[in-house]
Length: 474
Ligand code: FMN
Image (cartoon, rainbow, N blue to C red; front, side, top):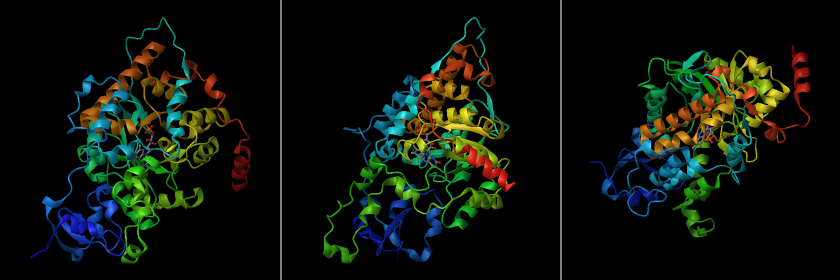
């Protein structure tokens, strides 16, 4: 008969030398540091790693620790208010903060170092002013749009974000369900907490998804994932993320990861020889745990040809932060069909520029990029006016990262629907008040970017040498 272990007994085996994990009630001798991965890994992946012969028994479920309390819950967490009572994204974030666990909150909310880029992502939109026209019939507003030739109900999409199930059991499939209600696009994270097959299972026939890739050091793992993605009709393009080749320093996430781990230095020498927990690993936070295995050696020359061997899907490059890189990306059309200007929500390099600055840079130095690739932006979106300003500057679509996760945390599928509804309503109100009927008709004549332009990069552009090098290679 299978041996039954107490959770406390399993918990003692938390070292590199002796590492037990519990999966669906079974105890495995993992012989490697898989513990942190368990709650973050999509179903199916751990099963592939763990062999049946590693199963050493079952866990007594009555001895398992109870669920961690939400961040602000003094008393048992009350249910959220009706979603329709929440009027803006700040209110949704506030409710989500009370609903989700500390770990989820810290992972979602965190950004690098002093979180300057995270804050500035939104502030940058505040210093762009709108230029409304009057005496225009604004009865109608058509907010539909296209991405790579696919029709969308709105030019707002959900950015790839890992671990949606940390915030709500509906997870990424719940986000997909909400997007379906609006004809909105969703980009699925490489580190989603559900498999891509599960996420697109109930997709509408015309629903549009992208799939985001973090190329793994073990390239065959990424190749195998791409082979699975190539079979999913709902997934129309691959998003290759480039702005986080090494993890940013996210202290809120690390701090939450430290809860329960021994403080550095608290481990006695005598315990070390027995194989004590690896503090740096235990305290790395969700972000660093997920990052393990990501290849930091990607280059223009090597990686795009490698990708072309494994998929015929169009490629969108995510995380571009300078006009030089936007220009280089445009030279890789037609394989590269789009670029996402993003600083990873301020989670990679703090003080990196907001997407809206990069948009202005491209307009100033190499506007031809807009003719070669579609340009999308994300980061700091809180209001419909932010979305309309990005569209005026030439963005084809605008992504929301945390806002969708907070919506999910606040009210599951209905919470994400509420986020999309608020942003759609606000954007359409803004278009009407500007006197613009369609997304295509938006343009730079409707905004005043003078204040922002003072902060946009004005130094020596690397463009001339790039143009020369490219001509030399022809
Ligand atoms: N970007 C990726 O390319 N892949 C990811 O797996 C990923 N995970 C994320 C997880 C979280 C919790 C957050 C907040 C962002 C993540 N991002 C990831 C970055 C988002 O795609 C997006 O660039 C960013 O969230 C936009 O900023 P915003 O949160 O201010 O909207």
